[in-house]
Amino acid sequence: MALKILDSCINCDMCDPECPNDAISLGAEVYEIDADKCTECVGHYEKPTCVSVCPIDCVKPDAEHIENKDDLQAKFLRLYG
Image (cartoon, rainbow, N blue to C red; front, side, top):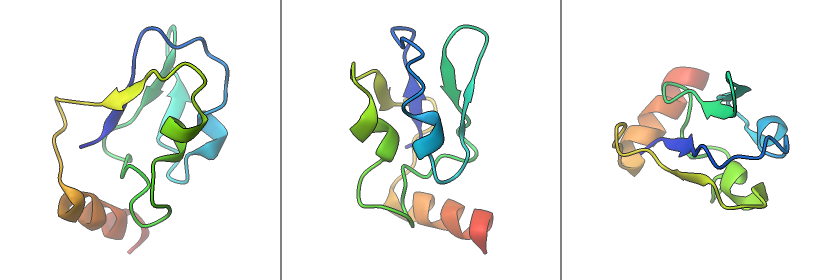
C-alpha cells in the first residue's frame, strides 16, 4: 500500500529529497505523500527511504490506498515505463 505521513510530522525535511518518485511535498501543515506516485520505493530500493530517514517514525502505511508488491511494481512501471 502507499504510505502516508502522520500529523505528528515535525517538517524536518528529511523525507522529501529522499523520495525517488517525487511523491512527497510540503502540504498545508505537514509533508504529504501523493499515493498515485508512491511505490514504497519498489523498483528503486528494498525499503522505503522516507521510512528509513524519518527521525520520529511518522511515515506509516495508508489504509486508504491498499496495494500489494505486484500493484506497486505495476505502478513503478507506469511511472517509469
